Every structure is written in structure tokens, then in C-alpha cells.
Image (cartoon, rainbow, N blue to C red):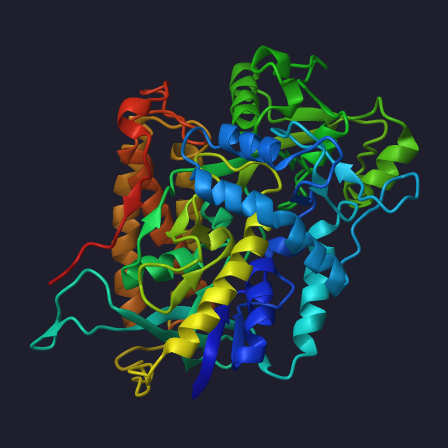
Length: 541
């Protein structure tokens, strides 16, 4: 079946839904999501959205904190633009119905939190359910809009592209000129549908599932990054994987994050003996940037041989902790941990991709009619290390700008070269009875990425990872073309692609900067490496 729309949005997090809502009055919108619509990284976000609302805060301070966190690789014009547009975008969320927390005195002012790397309180939040509060309101607005179609349990397979650079039927460039939409698998029926779109937006989130331990939900398999790269779009800075320092360590806990806001409210990291150790690593102690804290924990664990460290907020008033962190408190309690009286066991886990599909200040990729927003994109805001709670801010601002530009692009189109698209061709494939191939390769990728391309890297570890991913990629390619596709196979193909790109990017950067730390090159090198790591699919003529 073919669907014809003006805008195809792949993903239902804050970036994708915001974009969809803003363009819906200008054309038909299809939103596809591979699980239920609310199953997004946005929905799991606890901390909040960083923006300037405080009496003693300023745009200049927020810009300075962002640049300092990014270790020299942030684009200053992008940082300035995102920071200054933040309050307007957050006010728009409030106008739509998002109820952010107010101060404890019952006044009208927002209750602003503090997180690592910030010099002022500026985290707008809804308790510790911020993402859930935002996601719920956006989905309600999407559901009430007549010009949108929401397709749940539909996973994108690949982008559909068109090239004008043809010579005797052969493409003569490394990527195609235009994106015409995507092939999308309906997971419940096994049928692949053709979504023809005049504008396509990748809003598929991050790629935390590339790693064995992650705070991300199961959907975070780097789909947008992998699809864009296969189509020939530029990707950038994929070596900068942010490992959140404090993921709950418990055998029955899965992907549960202990928000950085806990440290912002006085939580202290301690070792198994009860010793606070962050003062050994940074003057900001527990409020140092995430890369510093994650490496400090990694070092402490390797030094002690222990499985975890602990986050201690037991010195705070018990009622305050329960009221400020109701979600975290109840989750910990379900595992027998009372955070008002017990330190919480924590470990670092893969959390956020600072790199992604390279875009301009309007969210446009270098393939016409293809946009990328949210964690899927590399905008230049985060540089080598994202400042806490700048992610939802970036998603809001770029969704707004991308929507404005996409509407202009739509209005300027004269005809459509993508009208007659070939349907998906499953010719020669059969049903697979070797599902173990998918699950085994999935497990192996996640394990060697954690061991070799994690918080601390080395040339030898990266070389081992490169050899393993090359072998696995060959197996996946053979399997992919022989058997009918499934959602598991699509995700495996994507995490393998992103894993390969992370390994390539990390191998290229001969220094340590921000989230990328190589023991062979422990120093930052501004002479040769004050630049982005940019990759494009090799051209096959």
C-alpha cells in the first residue's frame, strides 16, 4: 500500500510531535512510530528542560555553561540561538497545557532545579516526570488534529531517495538529491508500505541500545542515523556518546535513571566505604559535567573492584526527597531501597548521542527534503559533551525552526519528481527459521561496544571492535537479503551500522575531548582536533 502525504514524521518524541503539530495546518501529516506512540526517550526523561527564567540567571551564563561543557566543539551561533529561543518555546508548552512545577512558596514562579555543569538554577521540570508530562500533552493535541495520521507499530526500513545525477542509469554522486519518503514495515502484519512524502523528518531518538548498559528504552536503536547514512547523508561526532553517571544498579532494574537533579539537590557520590570521592576529580565535585563524573566512577570501580558506587541524599529532609523525587523514590522503594535512609547503588550507562545526522540551523540535512531533529541530529549545540537538560530544549527549538523552513520548502515546490515510487520488492526472500542469528549478533555488538568503546577507550580496544563489527556486518548483509524482514532484523541492522560509525569516529579522533577519552592520547589537542568528525557513506560507482 502507498500513502501520499506532505509531511512524513518518523518518531513520536518531543521533537517529532512538536514538528508535526506546527506543520499540520499546512499539509497532510503521517507520523510513524515503531511501538506505542508514548514509548519514547522523551517519556522517560526525568530531569527537565534547561532555560533562563531565574532572577539571577542570564542568556550569557547559559551560553557560557553550554560552551564550557562542549569542550570547544559547540557552534557558538547555534548555542546563542537555542538558548535565546528557549523561554519562548517553553512558554508555548505551558500554553498547550504542560503543567511545570511551581516554587514551594506557592507563588507563580517556576520551581527551577540545578544540575551538573550549570552555574544557576534553570531546570524547568514537572517533578521528576517532566518527559511524561510533555509527551502526554503533545499526544493529546496530535490525537485531536484532523490533518494527522498516527501509525503505531510501524517501523521505518529505509528512506526512499531520488537522484538527478544519472549517467546511463548510474548514480554519479555519493548521495541522492532528494528524499521521497520511506519504506515502512507494519510489524503486526509483516507488510511493507510505501510512504510517499514531500518532506521527511527523522525524529527517531538516540542509539543507547548499541551498548550493553543504557538508560534508554528498547526503541533507541539509532534508526534515523543509520537510515540517513545509508542514503548518503553526512553524520558527525558519533564518537561522543554520553554515559550518564548514575543509572540504578540492581539485578531487577532495567534502564532506570537516577536523575542528575538528585545531585543538584545535594546528593553526594560515595564509594563502598562511604567516602565522598568527587573532590578528587573536579573542583565542582558532584556537580561536575557528566563526562568527568562518569570517568571518575569508572576509575573508582576499576580501582576498588566493586560493582557500583552509591548516591547519598540521606542528609536531606525525608519529606523533601519524597516530594521532589516521587518517581525515583517509589521506583527505588520497589527494589527495597529507601533513598531517604539508604544510599542508592549506581553505575554509568549509555545515555545520549551528542553526534548524529549533520543538519543546519533549520534542521535540514544535505539531502533535499530530508530533515532531522532531536537526538537523531547533530546540530552543533552539544559539542563534545551535552550540558544536562539541554536535550529537550534543543528538540523544541529545532522542531520549531524545522517546521517553519519545511513549510516554506513545501510552498516553493513546483511539481513532484517522486510521484511514481517503486513498491517494496521482497523477491527471493523467505521466512527465517534462524532467529538466533539476530539475537546472538545483537548481544555480541552490545557487549563488545561496552567493553571496547565505552567510557574509556584505547587503540587496541578500538581495533578489536572494528574487526568484530566488520565480521558481524557481513553476516547481517547476507541474512538481510535472504530473508523477509522483521522489526528485530531492522533494528539489528541499524545498531550494527551505528556501532560501526561510532568505532570509525572514535578511531579517527587522536585526542581526548569531552566524552571521548583514549588512554593513548589523554590530552585535548586544539591544534589538530578542534573540529567535527564527519562521515559519509563511501560512493560505489
